[in-house]
Amino acid sequence: MTKRNLIADVLRLKSEKNALILAHNYQIPEIHAVADIVGDSLELALAARKATEPVLVLCGVRFMAETAHILNPEKKVLLPDSDAGCPLADFLTPGMILEAKEKYPEAAVVVYINSTAECKAVSDSVCTSGNAVRIVKSLKQRQVIFGPDTNLASYVQSVLPEKEIIPIPEGGHCYVHMQFDTEDLKEVKTAGISIMVHPECPANIRVHADHVISTGKMAEIAKTGSAWYICTEVGMLDRLKELCPDQSFIGLEDAICADMKKTSLQELITCLRDLTGEVIVPPEIMEKARRALEYMISVP
Ligand code: 13P
Ligand code: SF4
Image (cartoon, rainbow, N blue to C red; front, side):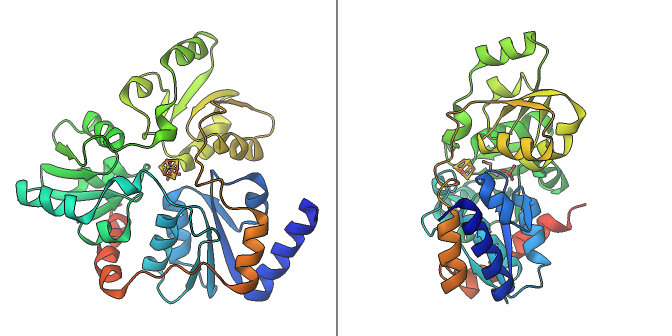
């Protein structure tokens, strides 16, 4: 079947099932083409929270579908590829958080949205790449246990020296964001190209950035420059070209998140047709995790 036919099938099934399709910026262009909302983790979470459709299809990875279900539990939330996970999220367990809490009883706990529902359930707040600094700053505690991304933790620490960030676990990282090269960035800078860096990149990459921002913010500010080097997953280049076709975006072709690339049009058709891949967060986890997510949303 041609891509056009597949897209037509998705759109027909979406309307038949009264489904809302939410897709992360890293998804392939044909998934963006059928999505109602394309955005970063925070934008997808907020859109899922206020959705009125009975079926929400999350084209992204598991923690995004879990978050949608926690924030809008009446809806049927579907993840088209049940194997689409996030290796960064897998670094952290609730046991590690509880152990850190015992060691630092005065500290607050903030988990990156790239974490399991079980980890969110034992945390005070969730944060995303776009609001991590704001969330940590909002807490009255000086000490903040923060996981699982040690790069995001070090970024927050660099912006908020008045806080003591305690990163857990040691070495938690996203493999996709570890592949950028400082020499490339120096060359790019010399050529007069501006640089946007995702905060999951390590500090030696972040120092070269004109902006350290979430993928949603990248989409917003892309229009303000004519040529950009983008330090994040390669799918973001497609997304930026969709939004700003006359501008130039370069990055690293090898910075691929295998899990974000698992969702295909064919899988989306099966998922919509049979309503498969439902993600259900158990009620006791859901209530506690929702408190941490709602705290994040409440911070202005
Ligand atoms: P954003 O929320 O900035 O899109 O980041 C999500 C993610 O998984 C980055 O790797
Ligand atoms: Fe997880 Fe990294 Fe993929 Fe984002 S890019 S979903 S952090 S593995």
